[in-house]
Length: 480
Image (cartoon, rainbow, N blue to C red):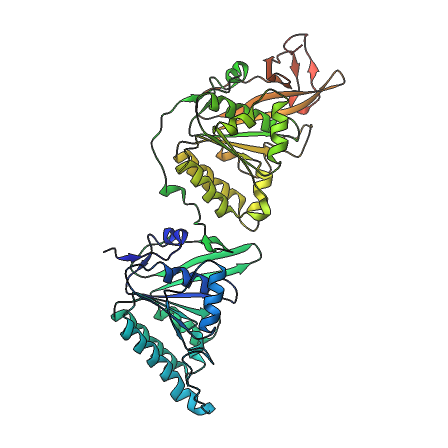
């Protein structure tokens, strides 16, 4: 038998290093509305080998069943001990204020222990244990009752989850020491966050992990930890399918590396990246494009106008186009999606378009840290990464590769720039960095035509190209 029990939520099991240790008690803390009861319901419904018991001290049994049914989480096969005021187990006894401290609190403790001995459940969920604090005469009696109850329940072979409101009182702080583990749920301005604060006898993934509460329950998205993932892959150069572009990069970009395509708006960054996906499709490889900036219909229409069959690539299964609304996604949710496409679907090339859009998804978090984790994971898995970065300046002497401070992640940096020549706006392409091999140090003219991408000969006849206002040295080295 496994030494751990599934929490009923796969993402939570992952950050718990496989689940909850058996025959222990765990505190689920958090304010109102964070999803504590839903988490406990998932935990109970995961039981298949024995009984599970739901002890409610707040909502009535009928309310719990009704709310669970709305989420598709039926409690029909779960025994519910209703100790809520006016609930099914309420015998109508009336106590004075003084009597309730000494009598009613002990009665609740005994009723829970008696029902457990009757059913011998493998899983118990108590919601919320904070109600017992109101029925105890002082902190000592409260601690004594809780410690006694948890020890008896776990000694009888049960694994116990119990909730408590996130209060700062001394009495509630005691629960942190009595439990074998603490799962903290928070509702912040940037989204819902789960953090494991403690887990005796087991490792876990530290940090805050985003989760969502939806119409089918609770889903948790583990924070990406690159060092825990990796696989072997063949080191090879990947062609763009454009000979002149491959000359710039001395044979192409390498598999399992990060390429940053940087330039101002409208210069052709996404189209250039799509060219690599087209070439990957010709090799029968699967690519994924996560677009934060445009819809699928707009992208497909633009590609069709330059003879780049993006829509056909989607239809044949060589490309997945995923339009991402940044404000509807959190970084852990996006990373979970990327992992699925890589580990389950076999993606070999991933395009993030663009870093500016991704920044909106990681609101409140460190962009560099999130991009670093995602890129390191993909590189470890042998996936080729294309990052699109938009620079703010169109032309000028002050050139920045990126305003996001992530250029250090790139193994290759391809820079696209505008220039004004003879009263006409032109474009150039060049390589600023390539860790894996040498590269061409010259700039070339870059054009997007009805026939696709065109890259010209080296522009050796011009100087000052990066300023956007070049000077002609001699009449050679440009496209006609």
